[in-house]
Length: 119
Image (tube, rainbow, N blue to C red; front, side, top):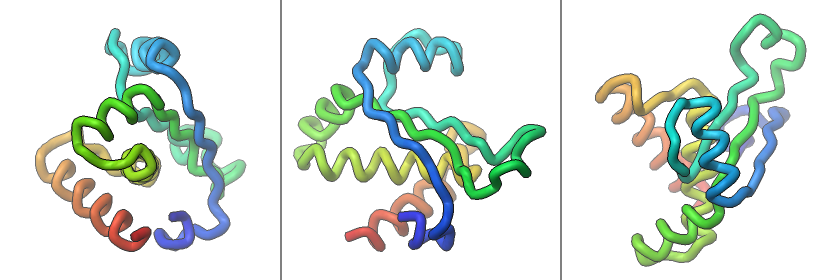
């Protein structure tokens, strides 16, 4: 994925957790007291972004949420995890679907392109 987006030397961490831990992170960092499927924590902003610019950040995925969503969509868990990884990565690149409708459309387009290139 990183090579596909033109950042072959970039780094990110991926953490797979359960719903309980995800709910705790979501409550702490987004003030939403519920679980979610994926969270991204960027290291590309803030006062220390120049220290290790190749470090993109962290992607956290709730495996139970991914399993539920895969079942609902009728596809394999592997496909859902890939989708969530792409979604998290696109957030780390600065896209945000919650900002406004135009940004949501732009983010969705970027995700589709990345998923297609991965296929």
